[in-house]
Length: 420
Image (tube, rainbow, N blue to C red):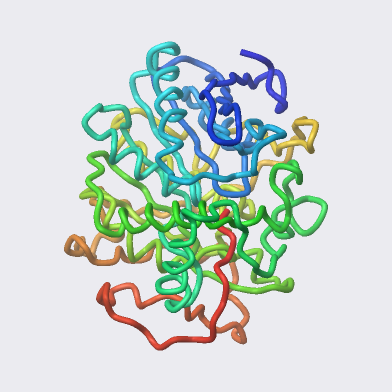
């Protein structure tokens, strides 16, 4: 283990994965040891155009006895080598070897008995498929999917027939990039040099994202089709999403309280396809990466995550010592050198008093819907003002309970947004 770019409390370990058609391949496992060993561990998986820099997330778990690990997948972040195409893959199953290796290190070498896997966006899609594929091995004890990439944020005409046609070209030209407009709105909403509060490497996570290539597009499409056909993940799954989506190519304040990358209705619609024990929580004011939302929303995310862990993953083990976080100062990742900068702890806010330990019930007087229906919305509406009334709802998804084969009216053509 070497000291990681995030500072002395973080270790990193390179996992050798052999070679592919571009040459040698590695992944990088980052670790934040817990304050006290409890046998519980976390494995975090980032999204597309992303890498691990979320020290405040690691601190949340470390202070509660969780051995925190994050994996920079092959060709991402710390694992991106000079000869490689950034963030490229031909099949999401290509990532299974590093997930298997990381799980083995976490369980066997580090001596942990309970493993929670957290996946953000594309990492959420990957985490779901891996948990399904390894369901007989008993590796995973719980799954938290943070704004998972269950479908492309585009009109039906684009995300079905046009993307299918593009994917068929992948076997001939897998590295060919797709012409598209590049929006920097999401990057501006996050980075401290613009309108956000986070410092991270713009080399590893550029504002406009990396190019989307046909091989990667085909890989994502296959993975999404498998998920929508239905998985059988046997452990509790928490799906977190923002309350609303917003699409824009120019800056608007709505980008500070919406998911501007994916359509949150897709997450709600397909969450029941994961397994038989699925909880969906939607956060008013949430960003695409919920853990990078504004402080009040961020605090609510951690509060609900702790409650869910208490109820389903480690029953009877206290996960929070105060609503929504610790008394310690959370950390904001430093710039490209990897330093950390303290930020004030968010103010204490009321915590919802209702918690129903059912797969999809969200209020005491609401029965859980039948399997296969959309999970009702649960939000913390007190933390954010509503969006400007001039902003119209995103029209790119079917209604949540619509039949899977129904085709909505075709809106104007658009290109898929970058998943993150």
